[in-house]
Length: 260
Image 1: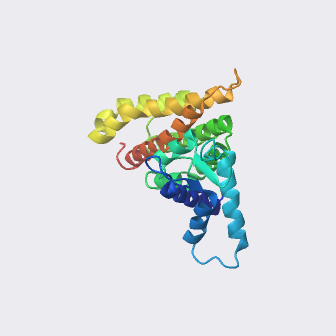
Image 2 (image 1 turned 90 degrees about the vertical axis):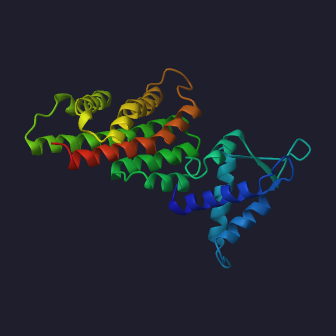
Image 3 (image 1 turned 180 degrees about the horizontal axis):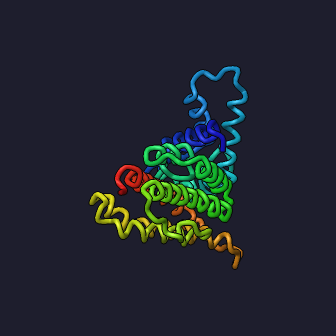
């Protein structure tokens, strides 16, 4: 999804949330919501491309099951529409949900800076998730997470070499699980040197973050059934990823400045 598309999608979700019926009263109508979105972009006279882009994103939200037409069985057709269960879930975390890529990326940017490879996979993962290609999204977010891990591995290896220390052979293994375990084993031996808060975060979350995303990615990448992964599992991977990237960044900073 392009940056303008993500911004428009977020504006539609925000406008629909603002107009969403509360306590069982009122309704959502496409004309009212889309009009508010258009106004949010300021003076738009003579900009039909923007109106087309807004319509495209609105219909994409319908196509991928965030919205559905109808108010109730007496009013099942446009202009009425409603949030689906999937849409209501996205609303719960609108500022950081993968269903709102602009908000998700903003939230991520406050936690970590990705390398270009990880960033490219993440952007494609968001496109897949919001196009309802759940298995593809699982693989792409898994690749983004692996890139973050390999980036940390490379920094640890370079630091050990610069200090003249031996580099554990498993750090250069081609299997990401082996690399993940090797990083954990090395830092586990050095955890007494970590600041208390970072040590506690590392002990509690490093393996859990890696396992959740890696398992979901492997389930999708090794087809044994029609639906090897669920929407909820992939959604969880997206929510975990910023936390994993943030922890990797903290460990990277410690390796760079404190490892001796």
